[in-house]
Image (cartoon, rainbow, N blue to C red; front, side, top):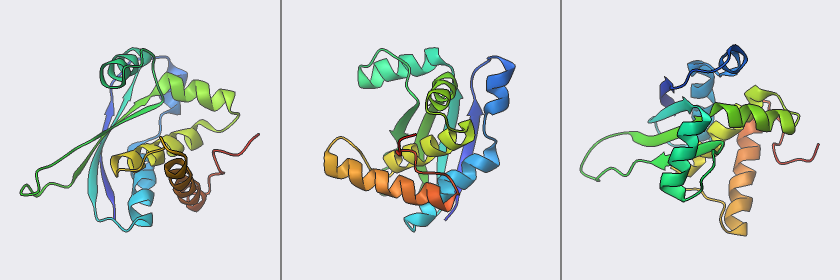
Length: 157
């Protein structure tokens, strides 16, 4: 139950943001925690770290929201006859993650972990549009992050 990560750094930015990026092993650990919790066999995930411009463009093109966002999830829908373990793509906006971590007074690595867990759950079909879906998804996130020794991301400061 391991995530196979295609790690992509697709931006140039200042040194502090580059230094804050999680490495491939961390991303693999976080995504694998989701697969393990849900007892899902090995899956491949592309994780692409981008700037605000790319995030905003994708968010506008695919969600009709003309602003950058922390994480976008693009599930891969493979025809049943094709034996491929690709789960999909996660697009992580580095400047948004850094700003949110600062505003929420949490370690940036914990926020990255939360967004990888959150995005991976989206790739697996979880959503938070309806209240009951949100409660289920958030409970899973809290449980998985706790196993990674990361505090509940939804708790108040």
